[in-house]
Image (cartoon, rainbow, N blue to C red; front, side):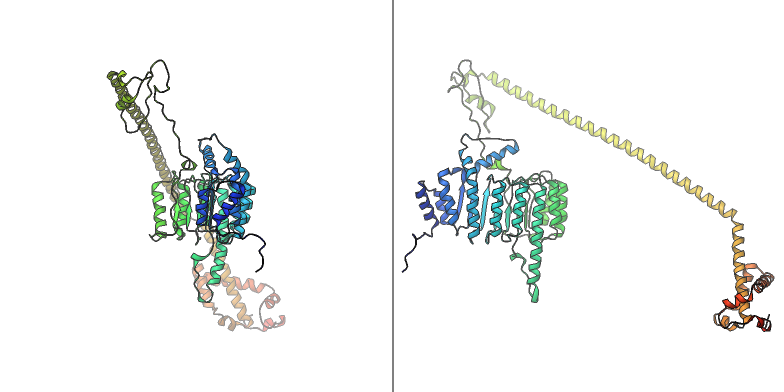
Length: 555
């Protein structure tokens, strides 16, 4: 057998991790070993000191069989609380500094794992302070990964610039089905980048569906690669404008199944656009708008009803995510303990400090207190307790009176507004009645003017019209006479022109035979006075010499 170049590497990732820890001189972490047995690596980076990082990095680089990689930071999540007005800093911040130095090395190891592993399905990096260079490196690994299905960068401050870089890779990485960009500082500009990814993948899927539909085949839309779930929870700067961008891009989308928009600052205006989108989109089975307190309950019920109808009323593979208020849900709130007096308390004059304990009455709390010298509750007389109760009753009555005063002020203001609206309405009604009366008056005047014009009439215009009709008919009658004189009377008969018709028209126009005959004679005279050469040129047929006009009948 041929000699091997070096020692054989064990296949068990846990053994490899232990060996690396021995080389670095550190103790292996039990949670890492337990996770590697199931081909998973889940770590809270706050627990890793600087000497513990190299074995973990080496394990990621060699972990071609890892299925799930997850890194979280609770301290970075706590620093996110400054965005909501709550800032807490721990005394020891050394792990956070170590994480900042080790993040480039971690991202490089993850990129190597993405390039070489065909088993990695999920990558979660939550609340890590990634910069643009590290995001760019991760984007290159995502574009080349052959098996990654789930990507979560929840809590990472990638903003719109980092999201733009990631979207360039998401257009190519068709194996990724679920992405989570919750609490990443994304605005509606970032939503536009995501919609471009959805549209690009939709074009590729349509082409693939067309190719699969050839030769009488039916394409299976559910097995086509691409985004299926998009989570943008707790990004309040998305607001209504981002919701409108999503609504414009998703009416014809057939593959996106779940859209999470919890606590994104969306109001009824954005919800209306999403409702209009759901009318034409029957593929979305999860549209989570919880935490958007500006949306009415009826609107939410309408959206939930439509989504439930799309899902067919049954369970789907896409579940509803739990509601989280924000990063403060990750950090446990610590309350200052109330130190009882008498045990290291203030010396001298006695003082009383009552701790707020839920479910305990005032008298019981007073019984359990002690004074500065360590005396019992007997030092507090029943009279003081009674005075305290009376003071509480007075305070309660004062609060009730203040509330009633506020309600009365509000009712008075509402009454004043109602009275103003009534006055405005009466004024508008009076204006409308005045305008209607003015319209009736104008209509009456218009009718009077019309009747006056009809009574007066326009005799001059009628006479001129009749005269023009008579002159045109007489000219036409003379034209027929000319045709007969020339010998083309048959042509007029073929055309349906008869002298009797023209005579009847002239009689109806002039009112008698005398006028007709007179007009006909005048027309014939005026026609015969014109040069015969021009008449001969205008008439069709052979030209007749001037000397032969005397020989024609009727001349």
